[in-house]
Length: 180
Image 1 (spheres, rainbow, N blue to C red):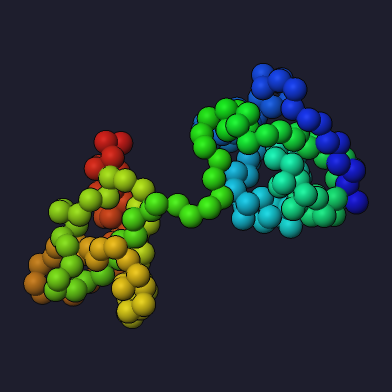
Image 2 (cartoon, rainbow, N blue to C red; image 1 turned 90 degrees about the horizontal axis):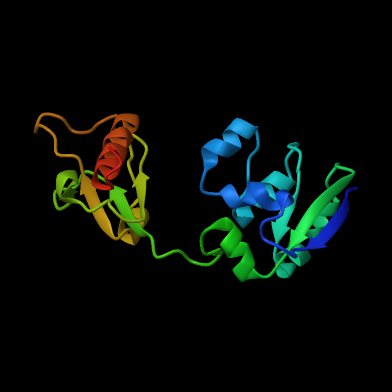
């Protein structure tokens, strides 16, 4: 059972919080051999895993919600830094959010009325759904999506392998976002 070493945040530039100030620079974390869990589902999975928890940076309300899981960890002690949401957002470099996200959903599906990939807008926050190679996506998933998009192909081809289709969609999304 871990002892929680709860410390209210006094200053944003303390060495203990440095790892949290690089949340958008994943490569630095990889080089340091650490993983920073940044949303509640990932944090919950981390707390249930065998991976060592080095520290936690939480609001008071999240500490209350995660306290039992943190204390159940095998580490002897876990430093827990607690602060208000605005300073934590300043440390993280972005707005912390655990609600619904304004994300556009796109079904990758071959249908006659689907938008061709070359004409689809994948430049913003987009979730792309891919189905299994034989059955494809269910009608429920397709109807829940904002748009249905297909890869234009020769008439004698009826589909691509799902891995190949995913690669084509991701290439197009990356190209549209200017990351090429």
